[in-house]
Image (cartoon, rainbow, N blue to C red):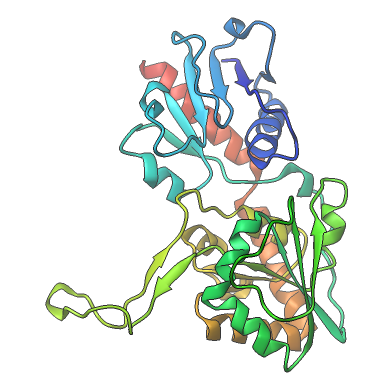
Length: 322
């Protein structure tokens, strides 16, 4: 079957287009699956995959799919299938469409990156890349951890985002640099990092905030956390591909790699962030070992051609049983 992507947005600086349209189209073609973007005659194609935010189905007789639609979109059930980037996102819309297929945020432009080799340094660069909104989530632990760490080590926090909007909360009082994200310089920027951080969870309640009911199996030591339904492993994958050791919060998608502590650190609280960062600041050989393990694991688990082949086969099953 032949695939065409239909996308109004063709800006490679937009992650959803770059990963789930441009890159995925390339992976299909490399797998000898005929695929193209915005052809002149879409009716020549069996499968139509619509870009993020494109909900106007042009031919309902075809197999129509939607890329990462909003979970509160009222026409999700009009599509034959949905492509999402994480289990979290799938779960948020499974009540509206039974055919939801995962394709992780595997970035083609990092596939051949030579991972960084870490050396002893007097100043440690702790880096962040991605949506600037997640920086506001530093307030639940990372902010204080960085300020504590700054009293022990010479550190600098570098963050690269598409826009420098106001950092409203959780901004640490340490030396910081902002670098505007663009496709030409992002590899070089990320490989200046000695450690990469991935904050995502926006709030949590510890034992001082939760009531206890042991009969129902609810304890004061439980944790209650909040994160976006579109949370995913994308930012972590980029850091791992570039050879940067990772400290990330315990967002479920992150645990596919960080469930093995040899691959990096999964944290939540201020002490969790602090002790993980402290160990990596102290020992460049640990940074090398951790980053190599994560790099190898990402290569093993996130081969985009294997994921693209699985996705294609799942879509073909819809055709078969229609």
